[in-house]
Amino acid sequence: MARNTQVGLREAYKNLKRRLRLGESKVLMAQVIRKICDEAGIREQELRNGGRRISQARAMISYYLSHELGILTAEIARHLGVCTSAIIKAIQKLESQSEK
Image (cartoon, rainbow, N blue to C red; front, side):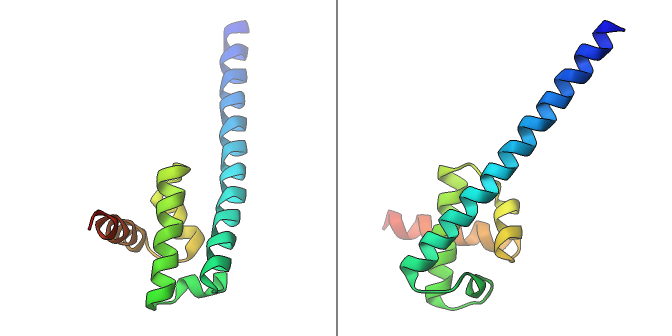
C-alpha cells in the first residue's frame, strides 16, 4: 500500500511540474509576442492575418519560441491562431533567408 502511495505522489508531482512549465511557457510566449510585435509596429491581433511584415514577425516569434524556448510548434500555432504547418513553413523560410 505504501508503494502505491509513493507512485501516486510521484505522478502528482510530475503533473504539477508539467502544469507549472505550461504556465511559465504561456507567460514567456506572451512576453516574446508582445516584444516582437512592438518592435515590428503591429498589433498582436494582426498575427492571424497575412502580409509581408506580419509574416516576418510571425516567423521571428515562431523561431524564437521554438528554438530558444523549446515550445512545440503546435502550441505556438494555437497561441498565434494559425495552423501548425504555417508555423513550420515560417520557421523554415526564416532559416533559409538567414543561410543566404
